[in-house]
Length: 255
Ligand SMILES: [Zn+2]
Image (cartoon, rainbow, N blue to C red; front, side, top):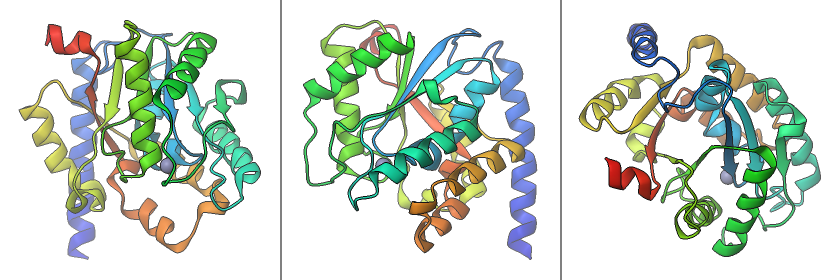
């Protein structure tokens, strides 16, 4: 009872702070103008929901055009075809139409297989062009869950941005340590503190209605709703908030 009360208080504070954040930025925390097109690069169908929902919905509500590039069909247990359909349904619920969701059967969903960074890079190049995107969002060096495919996704995206000297902002999703991962709304305290300490990081927090949309979208990933994932979506802070760092060289030079 006490925990529920504390969570309700923290959640209310978090909504108030979110409104305050929104007032601080004319457009959005990433400085992208209305109507801009952005691309989220994920590894498996359901990543968009489990990890990126707060930001997908935030940018969509700020009138940006969001596309999703999923590099594998998630066929590790032979459910690839089913999972592609689930991805489309989940994205549709998030407000991303099917024509802006690209799911490729090009990279193997397998934590023991290394994805070639040049190949990932050239694939990203193709879909950046196709979606006319001007900013990229993906995992950081630890891939949130530590899955090798997530980490290889970043390596390929980063290679595209840095080695190919593309002038395109790259935002990477911060992996928080396990003690913060599953305390849901209570992590807002730490997240706010770290965003004040590191003002270059960008914190995105969902409202209650956005959170419910994300939760609903996760239910479309029926093949993935095993008991531990149900617990994950209940307790994970990533269903409610995302912290981003900019990763391209441009940012390092300009500060
Ligand atoms: Zn994944």
